[in-house]
Length: 240
Image (tube, rainbow, N blue to C red; front, side, top):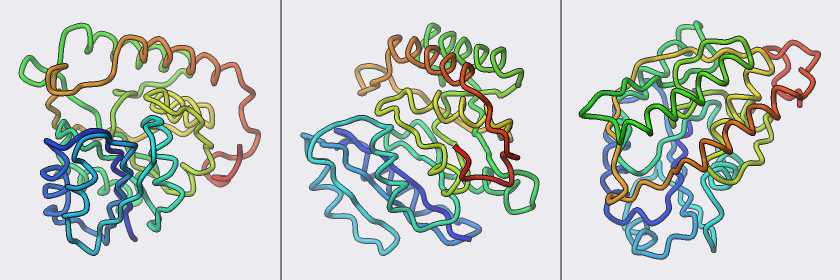
């Protein structure tokens, strides 16, 4: 199996080199590739990416910034692996956790795996950020009668073809809710794996806001209102 690690990047000149160094240093239980999408960065991100020399790394560039969801869509279109996972370049997530996400897939226990963040005083950006995240996750659980632990997690691991079949249209952070809503609508329940996490603050470049939470709730409601696919969601990944 080959795993495609998809990294959307926008103005991360201070962190992207370290993020790639950490991701490339992990001992993975399978072959990997890292697909970086520079989403129209205006700082020195592009120059830094050109300086990273590793055969496992491919870089795609957007001429202008169009959002995380659009960057992931580009990365997925060119992914060569059977499975994919998203890894942001902001150093909030530890790539050493990726093998833990792969474990239930490799042993046949799961098809889709989410990294479940444990928020604490040393790792959370703010009280309201955590409350907002829990609120959106609770809304998804109520709407779809499920019990996922962390809807907004970056670490979403699944088959590449499954993600492509979801046809994610959200260009920004709303893609997190759209992915989860479409999976739950198909009755695909992600397998939760605890992960480490350290949130950065606004002064460090954190971009998500309360508006993204409102958008996530709207997207979840929209997906819940749509008719559920009639085919078996596990056996028919291409079902829209």
